[in-house]
Image (cartoon, rainbow, N blue to C red; front, side):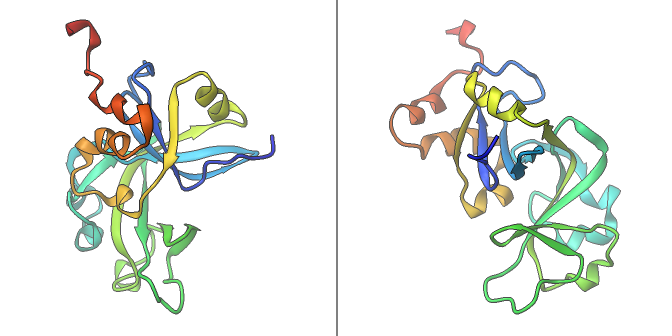
Length: 187
């Protein structure tokens, strides 16, 4: 497959998506090419404070300062996203650019090496992954809406309302999907 790739875009679960791992999910696609896709669910916080699993990083994590459920793959591992500020001369040690100002933080790096060099850090348990062609097939089958992301989406202060907010800002009929009931059988 050659393009279109979805790196930097959001996958918004359609109401028809029945997989419990992704119901009402908003997934930020971190990398997508001919080898598959990788993303993290940005609207599913857990109750587990970052301080309980990665205490040295607590001061760098944005609110809510809890671990997020990034997806069903490798849930026993952590992945951290952070943004570098505009105008930064050099990329901070321990941070690897994905696209734009967003990158991955190497959690084995001493936090003090990144202090002041990143902002808006968020930690995810697990990630979402797709084999070559799998994501494109799921989009074609109607499981996901692919929409543009905004810089604040990955670090929103109110992640639990992100699904509706992302849909509401879309043009035309897609904005109406935001009003779709959680359980249509109760209508």
